Image (cartoon, rainbow, N blue to C red; front, side, top):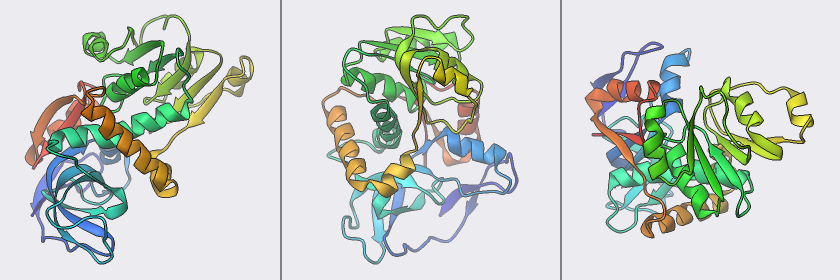
Length: 305
């Protein structure tokens, strides 16, 4: 089988031939049809001190199951987050992280929707949105952000503002349902909002906080870090809420499953539509990473084994 690997921080990425793995207890062996590329994995390649397996979202067909697997069998179509070597034509997926792909849904749509949609929906839930409230979504053209814009609409947002790195992305974000689109470099971010979903972090975190009304909520779910001054919270009684999908998946499996079912329902109803920016072969994984690093993507970037 083929998989993508690198040997030192920053790459380069290359494809190697390795033996087919055996599924261990609770694991599925999946022949991947589509693999989602995410910013956290891209950052691991450029920032981690030692090389790490390139994990990620995968979708495909189960070809073998390990001991103790009860929910899936060979031939089933699944999608989920692979924590090991996911940039491969065959990958190991833990049963707890797997979700059945319904009906005739394609693997690319499944990869573009489910994991990114779970993060977007979880961040939205953390904000405790009320009907009619205004929201601002940073990285609104990203794999997660473009779904968050749509999901905010399904939860009754009265005004949705998308924030993007490049004004050229404005048309794409408006087409998703955003009322207004701003750029990170704009001098003013307009009328304050009730809650912000921030996927960027870093220096943008302070601007996101200042974009809130008094008692507004900022949900931070980025891997980009950032610092906020306590006084900026106290003066207008604002709050910052951290969200991490892995904690929900591990600690609240019933809620995780509820969100998965909601995403599939919204997808089937046409209320949420994942957008794929580009598809790359495994051999072109470095080019896929470059698209993410350059913030060039409009929607999801996918590898096709």
